Length: 284
Image (cartoon, rainbow, N blue to C red):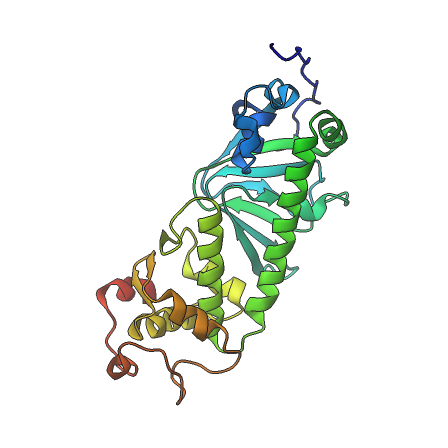
Protein backbone atom coordinates (compact mmCIF):
# COMPACT_ATOMS: atom_id res chain seq x y z
CA UNK A 1 0.00 0.00 0.00
CA UNK A 2 1.44 3.35 -1.05
CA UNK A 3 1.83 6.02 1.66
CA UNK A 4 -0.61 8.94 1.45
CA UNK A 5 0.55 11.93 -0.52
CA UNK A 6 1.89 14.71 1.64
CA UNK A 7 1.71 18.21 0.14
CA UNK A 8 5.03 20.06 0.03
CA UNK A 9 5.78 22.68 2.63
CA UNK A 10 5.87 26.16 1.15
CA UNK A 11 9.12 27.76 2.20
CA UNK A 12 9.79 31.48 2.22
CA UNK A 13 11.51 32.95 -0.85
CA UNK A 14 15.29 32.67 -0.71
CA UNK A 15 16.74 36.17 -0.27
CA UNK A 16 19.56 35.09 1.97
CA UNK A 17 22.84 35.67 0.22
CA UNK A 18 24.38 37.28 -2.80
CA UNK A 19 25.69 33.82 -3.71
CA UNK A 20 23.85 32.54 -6.78
CA UNK A 21 21.62 29.47 -6.30
CA UNK A 22 22.51 26.35 -8.26
CA UNK A 23 19.18 24.54 -7.98
CA UNK A 24 17.01 22.75 -5.49
CA UNK A 25 17.15 19.49 -3.67
CA UNK A 26 14.78 17.98 -1.16
CA UNK A 27 14.78 17.81 2.60
CA UNK A 28 15.28 14.07 2.23
CA UNK A 29 18.47 14.72 0.22
CA UNK A 30 19.76 16.98 2.97
CA UNK A 31 18.96 14.46 5.69
CA UNK A 32 20.66 11.63 3.79
CA UNK A 33 23.73 13.82 3.35
CA UNK A 34 23.77 14.39 7.12
CA UNK A 35 23.80 10.62 7.63
CA UNK A 36 20.15 9.66 8.11
CA UNK A 37 20.16 6.20 6.51
CA UNK A 38 16.59 5.51 7.63
CA UNK A 39 15.35 7.52 4.64
CA UNK A 40 16.54 4.77 2.32
CA UNK A 41 13.46 2.77 3.34
CA UNK A 42 10.56 3.37 0.92
CA UNK A 43 7.89 5.62 2.38
CA UNK A 44 9.90 6.36 5.52
CA UNK A 45 9.32 10.12 5.44
CA UNK A 46 7.09 11.31 2.55
CA UNK A 47 7.08 14.88 3.83
CA UNK A 48 10.87 15.15 3.56
CA UNK A 49 10.79 13.68 0.06
CA UNK A 50 8.31 16.35 -1.14
CA UNK A 51 9.87 19.38 0.57
CA UNK A 52 12.19 21.43 -1.63
CA UNK A 53 15.39 22.89 -0.18
CA UNK A 54 17.61 25.48 -1.87
CA UNK A 55 21.11 24.46 -2.95
CA UNK A 56 23.70 27.19 -3.48
CA UNK A 57 27.14 27.23 -5.04
CA UNK A 58 29.96 29.28 -3.53
CA UNK A 59 33.09 29.74 -5.62
CA UNK A 60 36.54 29.54 -4.04
CA UNK A 61 37.33 32.80 -2.26
CA UNK A 62 33.73 34.00 -2.12
CA UNK A 63 31.92 34.83 1.11
CA UNK A 64 28.86 32.84 2.08
CA UNK A 65 28.42 34.71 5.35
CA UNK A 66 29.51 38.26 6.12
CA UNK A 67 30.31 39.21 9.69
CA UNK A 68 27.64 41.61 10.97
CA UNK A 69 25.16 40.72 8.22
CA UNK A 70 21.56 39.80 9.19
CA UNK A 71 21.24 36.24 10.42
CA UNK A 72 18.58 34.65 8.22
CA UNK A 73 19.51 31.03 7.54
CA UNK A 74 21.46 27.91 8.37
CA UNK A 75 23.82 26.44 5.78
CA UNK A 76 24.67 22.74 5.55
CA UNK A 77 27.87 21.97 3.65
CA UNK A 78 27.22 19.49 0.85
CA UNK A 79 30.58 19.71 -0.94
CA UNK A 80 33.74 21.72 -0.39
CA UNK A 81 35.40 23.42 2.56
CA UNK A 82 34.77 26.72 4.35
CA UNK A 83 36.89 28.94 6.55
CA UNK A 84 35.11 30.46 9.55
CA UNK A 85 36.72 33.63 10.87
CA UNK A 86 36.22 37.05 12.38
CA UNK A 87 37.93 40.34 11.56
CA UNK A 88 39.03 42.70 14.30
CA UNK A 89 38.72 46.49 14.10
CA UNK A 90 42.37 46.78 13.07
CA UNK A 91 41.76 44.42 10.14
CA UNK A 92 43.38 41.32 11.63
CA UNK A 93 41.65 38.12 10.48
CA UNK A 94 41.35 35.44 13.15
CA UNK A 95 40.54 31.97 11.81
CA UNK A 96 38.28 30.06 14.18
CA UNK A 97 37.53 26.81 12.36
CA UNK A 98 37.29 24.96 9.05
CA UNK A 99 34.06 23.26 8.03
CA UNK A 100 33.54 20.49 5.50
CA UNK A 101 30.85 18.11 4.31
CA UNK A 102 27.91 17.48 6.69
CA UNK A 103 28.77 20.44 8.90
CA UNK A 104 26.40 23.32 9.65
CA UNK A 105 27.35 26.97 9.24
CA UNK A 106 25.81 29.94 11.08
CA UNK A 107 24.61 27.82 13.99
CA UNK A 108 26.31 30.34 16.28
CA UNK A 109 23.87 32.99 14.98
CA UNK A 110 20.71 30.93 15.35
CA UNK A 111 19.47 33.06 18.27
CA UNK A 112 21.07 36.31 17.14
CA UNK A 113 20.07 39.09 14.77
CA UNK A 114 23.45 39.32 13.03
CA UNK A 115 26.35 36.97 12.30
CA UNK A 116 29.22 37.17 14.82
CA UNK A 117 31.59 35.48 12.36
CA UNK A 118 32.15 35.21 8.61
CA UNK A 119 32.53 32.20 6.32
CA UNK A 120 34.25 31.99 2.95
CA UNK A 121 34.85 29.04 0.61
CA UNK A 122 38.36 27.61 0.36
CA UNK A 123 37.34 25.74 -2.81
CA UNK A 124 34.28 25.61 -5.04
CA UNK A 125 31.56 24.43 -2.67
CA UNK A 126 27.83 23.86 -2.36
CA UNK A 127 25.51 24.29 0.62
CA UNK A 128 21.90 23.51 1.43
CA UNK A 129 20.12 26.64 2.67
CA UNK A 130 17.26 26.65 5.18
CA UNK A 131 15.83 29.90 6.45
CA UNK A 132 15.50 30.31 10.21
CA UNK A 133 11.82 31.17 9.81
CA UNK A 134 11.21 27.79 8.14
CA UNK A 135 12.82 25.70 10.89
CA UNK A 136 9.70 25.31 13.11
CA UNK A 137 7.50 24.15 10.23
CA UNK A 138 10.11 21.71 8.96
CA UNK A 139 10.70 20.30 12.43
CA UNK A 140 6.97 19.70 12.96
CA UNK A 141 6.41 18.16 9.54
CA UNK A 142 9.56 16.02 9.50
CA UNK A 143 10.67 14.97 13.01
CA UNK A 144 13.73 13.29 11.51
CA UNK A 145 14.99 16.69 10.39
CA UNK A 146 14.80 18.05 13.92
CA UNK A 147 16.97 15.16 15.13
CA UNK A 148 19.52 15.80 12.38
CA UNK A 149 19.52 19.50 13.23
CA UNK A 150 20.29 18.67 16.85
CA UNK A 151 23.12 16.38 15.79
CA UNK A 152 24.56 19.05 13.49
CA UNK A 153 24.39 21.60 16.28
CA UNK A 154 26.11 19.19 18.64
CA UNK A 155 28.93 18.71 16.11
CA UNK A 156 29.34 22.50 15.85
CA UNK A 157 29.67 22.77 19.64
CA UNK A 158 32.13 19.88 19.65
CA UNK A 159 34.35 21.69 17.15
CA UNK A 160 34.33 24.75 19.41
CA UNK A 161 35.54 22.61 22.30
CA UNK A 162 38.21 21.09 20.04
CA UNK A 163 39.59 24.57 19.34
CA UNK A 164 39.95 25.09 23.08
CA UNK A 165 41.80 21.77 23.25
CA UNK A 166 44.18 22.84 20.49
CA UNK A 167 44.98 26.14 22.17
CA UNK A 168 45.61 24.42 25.51
CA UNK A 169 48.93 23.13 24.17
CA UNK A 170 51.94 25.44 24.49
CA UNK A 171 54.24 23.87 21.89
CA UNK A 172 53.37 24.70 18.28
CA UNK A 173 54.10 21.13 17.16
CA UNK A 174 51.58 19.80 19.66
CA UNK A 175 48.95 22.27 18.47
CA UNK A 176 49.58 21.17 14.89
CA UNK A 177 49.39 17.49 15.87
CA UNK A 178 46.01 18.06 17.56
CA UNK A 179 44.74 20.01 14.56
CA UNK A 180 45.73 17.22 12.15
CA UNK A 181 44.04 14.60 14.34
CA UNK A 182 40.85 16.66 14.55
CA UNK A 183 40.87 17.10 10.78
CA UNK A 184 41.43 13.35 10.42
CA UNK A 185 38.35 12.62 12.56
CA UNK A 186 36.20 15.08 10.62
CA UNK A 187 37.23 13.52 7.30
CA UNK A 188 36.55 10.02 8.61
CA UNK A 189 33.08 11.11 9.75
CA UNK A 190 32.31 12.32 6.23
CA UNK A 191 33.46 9.06 4.65
CA UNK A 192 36.94 10.18 3.55
CA UNK A 193 40.37 8.81 4.36
CA UNK A 194 41.53 9.72 7.88
CA UNK A 195 45.18 9.15 6.98
CA UNK A 196 45.68 10.76 3.57
CA UNK A 197 44.18 14.13 2.77
CA UNK A 198 44.77 17.38 0.92
CA UNK A 199 44.83 20.55 3.00
CA UNK A 200 42.38 23.02 1.48
CA UNK A 201 43.68 25.78 3.73
CA UNK A 202 47.06 27.49 3.44
CA UNK A 203 49.67 27.70 6.16
CA UNK A 204 48.68 31.30 7.01
CA UNK A 205 45.12 30.19 7.76
CA UNK A 206 46.41 27.27 9.84
CA UNK A 207 48.77 29.61 11.68
CA UNK A 208 45.94 32.02 12.44
CA UNK A 209 43.82 29.23 13.87
CA UNK A 210 46.71 27.84 15.94
CA UNK A 211 47.77 31.27 17.19
CA UNK A 212 51.34 31.10 15.88
CA UNK A 213 53.40 32.66 13.08
CA UNK A 214 53.12 31.03 9.67
CA UNK A 215 56.87 30.32 9.70
CA UNK A 216 56.29 28.37 12.92
CA UNK A 217 53.67 26.23 11.18
CA UNK A 218 56.19 25.34 8.47
CA UNK A 219 58.80 24.38 11.07
CA UNK A 220 56.20 22.33 12.95
CA UNK A 221 55.28 20.40 9.81
CA UNK A 222 59.00 19.78 9.26
CA UNK A 223 59.49 18.54 12.82
CA UNK A 224 56.56 16.12 12.64
CA UNK A 225 57.76 14.85 9.26
CA UNK A 226 61.37 14.42 10.39
CA UNK A 227 60.24 12.17 13.24
CA UNK A 228 58.25 9.94 10.90
CA UNK A 229 54.83 10.83 12.29
CA UNK A 230 53.59 12.36 9.02
CA UNK A 231 54.65 12.77 5.41
CA UNK A 232 54.06 16.11 3.67
CA UNK A 233 54.17 16.91 -0.03
CA UNK A 234 53.09 20.53 -0.49
CA UNK A 235 49.49 20.42 0.85
CA UNK A 236 49.16 16.63 0.68
CA UNK A 237 49.51 15.07 4.14
CA UNK A 238 49.75 11.41 5.12
CA UNK A 239 49.68 10.34 8.76
CA UNK A 240 52.29 7.59 8.94
CA UNK A 241 52.04 6.81 12.65
CA UNK A 242 48.53 7.48 13.95
CA UNK A 243 49.21 6.07 17.42
CA UNK A 244 52.46 8.01 17.70
CA UNK A 245 50.75 11.24 16.65
CA UNK A 246 48.00 10.67 19.21
CA UNK A 247 50.58 10.00 21.93
CA UNK A 248 52.49 13.14 21.09
CA UNK A 249 49.31 15.25 20.89
CA UNK A 250 48.59 14.48 24.54
CA UNK A 251 51.67 16.46 25.55
CA UNK A 252 50.76 19.97 26.71
CA UNK A 253 54.15 21.68 26.83
CA UNK A 254 57.07 19.77 25.34
CA UNK A 255 58.19 20.21 21.75
CA UNK A 256 59.82 17.58 19.57
CA UNK A 257 63.22 19.22 20.03
CA UNK A 258 63.23 18.84 23.81
CA UNK A 259 65.07 15.92 25.43
CA UNK A 260 62.98 12.96 26.43
CA UNK A 261 60.35 13.20 23.71
CA UNK A 262 59.94 9.66 22.41
CA UNK A 263 57.98 7.94 19.71
CA UNK A 264 60.15 9.10 16.80
CA UNK A 265 61.20 6.88 13.94
CA UNK A 266 64.19 8.89 12.70
CA UNK A 267 65.90 10.50 15.69
CA UNK A 268 69.07 11.11 13.69
CA UNK A 269 67.15 13.53 11.48
CA UNK A 270 65.53 15.46 14.31
CA UNK A 271 67.98 18.39 14.18
CA UNK A 272 68.78 18.25 10.48
CA UNK A 273 68.43 21.49 8.56
CA UNK A 274 67.60 19.67 5.32
CA UNK A 275 63.94 19.48 4.45
CA UNK A 276 62.30 16.71 2.42
CA UNK A 277 61.34 17.89 -1.08
CA UNK A 278 57.65 18.12 -0.21
CA UNK A 279 58.36 20.40 2.75
CA UNK A 280 60.42 22.91 0.82
CA UNK A 281 57.31 24.25 -0.91
CA UNK A 282 55.42 24.35 2.38
CA UNK A 283 58.17 26.33 4.06
CA UNK A 284 58.72 28.67 1.11
